[in-house]
Amino acid sequence: MPAITGTFSGVIMTQSAIAIPEQPLHALVIAAVSGHHTAPDTPWDDAKLVYCGMGDLIAGNGMQSGYFHNEHTNGDTTSGTFEATVAMSGLESKVEGVWNLVSGTGKFSGITGGGKFQARSTTPVTVEMTWEGEYALPN
Image 1 (cartoon, helix red, strand yellow):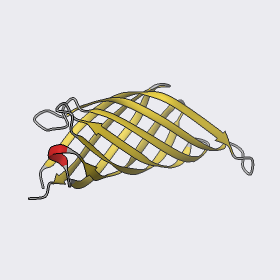
Image 2 (tube, helix red, strand yellow):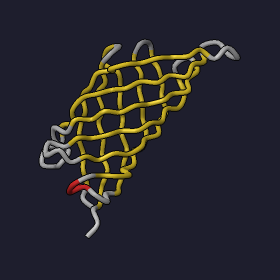
Image 3 (cartoon, rainbow, N blue to C red):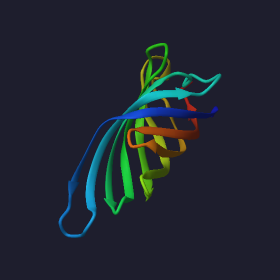
């Protein structure tokens, strides 16, 4: 399996929260983020990423899961899921978790793989991420 590493910079396109009344500061949050990867010498370099995450947070801390979709520069796509923990410190959130590739198109048809990521908010509407992992394509 080829190893891959990269970074991502993006903006929050939309975000909504619903307060859960059974406990103070408990909320269900959904957000969509869009941006581009930097991953030199890999098919992920300059790929556009859109991910949608759902969080169950108490005072800004908790779990997040969701889906991601990469559009590579040649038009082929890769998609998958992620699960993570979220921790707030002031206005900055830190997210650490795992990602799994579940589908692809074109030269990525049949792709599998996964890895780890770390993300953080750099402003109320921007996100930076580092990621690593590996992938495999069918023979």
